[in-house]
Image (cartoon, rainbow, N blue to C red):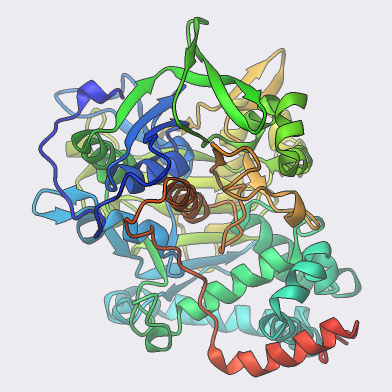
Length: 584
């Protein structure tokens, strides 16, 4: 997907102020990585008059991209779409929707044309006592999904689940979980970073002392399904803040920053494959503004002199090397690819990057099932909580609003079930092996079986064996000598990891770090965090060049002001070395 593929006629609003040259005259920026962080930084900088070149070793869009299943399109149709994992845009996201609103699509923009609200949530609790329930996810969704949510079987399933949860998770435990969220909501930031970041989510909510269902659904399933994190190791601060943000996003008029309306837009998604809806229009726009894309080329070395990068080495997919010289450099690559670049010379110049080696990544990879019959369910994400591999999914035909058989493949496929596999280290139900120990074929069968056992219950039969045409596993997962490897692991914020995470600026004056491993307001390995990091890099470069251009907007996660007095009280207690007043 090189620059030559894209036209130059697109237009969108740009930064409000014209940049000045300032005392530092250099305006050449080299960005290594064309994923979310790199494209976001390029967007902010090119709109402010900088010269930007993006070097990408494989695919623009990174983990956010979609991909064709090559060779599946027949009769003038496009290849079937595959992806690293389905796209999910919670209502608390602000940076990504803002960027989308500045990417032109015809007479509109990506946000207006392609970002839509989910109407429902299909919740499946993977256990003998529970049944799948379809619940409206927005005010509009209440009306749009009434023919499904008000079916007798759905109402019965809801009551069965309610009574089962009350039986299996005692009210004292449910109350305690609510208390722990209240503690997080009223903790000052100093305590969140200084105390709760060093505690795992499992320990924070005392899951080891509670019932089995408490551990399964309130600890393990929530963390792994949401952020590919393990409750035993994930930072309580990260998980707790994320849970609060998701809750506040549904507060409607109370949170004007999210602009969701009452119970509207809590869960958003794209109405087309990701590249078609977002990545391709984005690259076309950036190209039209002057961003240069150098494909099949990645950063392989940094040369440091004093506190400056004097030269960088890049390597092409064929193994050829060359040097790149610019005024400012940004690494916008996954943390596993950043680590080898942190040589002793680099760390002596930027000791603040030493902690990067302590950061941990994990797997969260997608598989798509192509079906010959449309599901007929509302626009709804599926959360199969308690499934061994922590599965989340969505049927794509309804939100896309397309006749998939007319547009993609050979005409047989009418539905796409896109599934994220969040836990690759727990044995499955068919083979007794973890996902990392399975072959691709075994993974496809195991995921299908877990979905079948969790969703085909309580009068629902959401998937059928005779409707399955084919499947597609993220090609980033490969096998060598019987061992699985993942080219696109995801950072997980483990307990105590905050001090190890870099900031966008480094002690090297012309080197900046972008990616979901950079400290951000959302503090989560997400498109939103990566986008925010790109904006932080752009602002740091604007500062270093004394530009008078308007800075890229950085949006904090919203929290209600009524909590401020309680946070102030907790800040006083923190400074005195006292526990949170509700920490019992």
